[in-house]
Image (tube, rainbow over all chains, first blue to last red; front, side, top):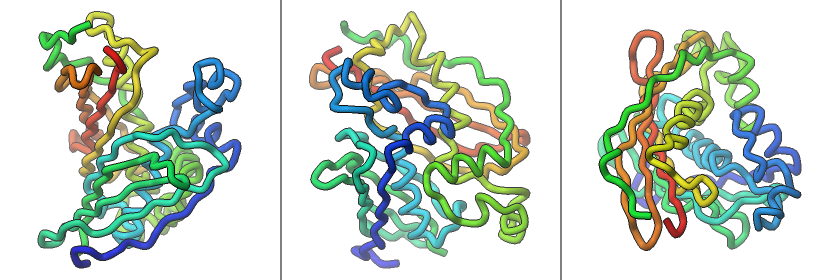
Length: 128
Length: 147
């Protein structure tokens, strides 16, 4: 792993009912995520993805970079910005920002088209 | 409304132990699209050196988020939930969490400040397993638009 290395992109398209399954799995039943009518009443275009679901995709991206071993993901920080929507592809991209011994820091973000839903994310992985 | 710094350092009571279930790990892993066998299969997890099926790192939200409830709802701090956004999130992982573990989480209000006309509330959660070992630290930043 070297500074500047691109990490293999992660592509995933959450289906229409993904927010419902994620709500059940995570325990977050905020209606803005699962009820399109409620979401519209509060001024959103429709029900939006859970931010922490997006963060979980960034985590998967970093886990893959670390060889699929969950022990090797040491730290992940993200900023939630644009709203994410079901039925649109999420692409997670990133590259190695720095390497220090057996630790590498990856700069990453997640976007749906031009809509960057997670920005300024940083993952620290063990490379040894 | 200007934020009251007197609340910085306030600690909320720890949650009752969260008992990590094998099927709950599988349900979460499936929902987020994880495919590594260590999240699903006991033998694969044991062969990789885990006690049992291991939780994906972001499973941290399942056992630590409930502890955020009383903190965010603290009437004295008075966060305006209608205008609140989850602005940023950080997790720092320690010992892996496996099925059968019992996880307790304690939350502290670490910082609060005004910036650019918005209020920022920074909470830190620390989750420990049944042996008292830290499994994850979470930094949760909530933003109230327009204060």
